[in-house]
Each structure stands twice: as structure tokens, then as C-alpha cells.
Length: 61
Image (cartoon, rainbow, N blue to C red; front, side, top):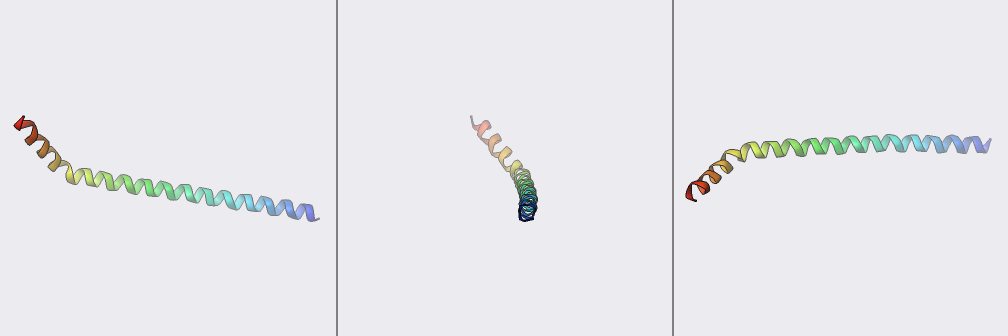
């Protein structure tokens, strides 16, 4: 009976660790999405200023 109990416990531990791996992967995905949104917002906000600066530099050349 002890072998069956040990086998069941080992399978339960493996299933729990899989769930945590999936949770970690989802958290990394959310962090990556947040970084992408911040980058898009920054480029949108700074885009006009950068284009104006590059236009000034190009005009002076």
C-alpha cells in the first residue's frame, strides 16, 4: 500500500508544479504585454518631437 501512496503523492506533486509553470508563463505574458503598451504609448507621445528634430537636422544639412 505504501508504494501506491508514494506513487499518488508523486503524481499530485507533478500536477501541482505544472499548474505553477502555467501560471508563471501567463504572468510573463502579461508583463510582456504591459511593456509593449508602454513602448507604444511612449513612441506615440514622442513621435512628433522626434520627427521635428530630425526635420530640423535634415534642413540644416
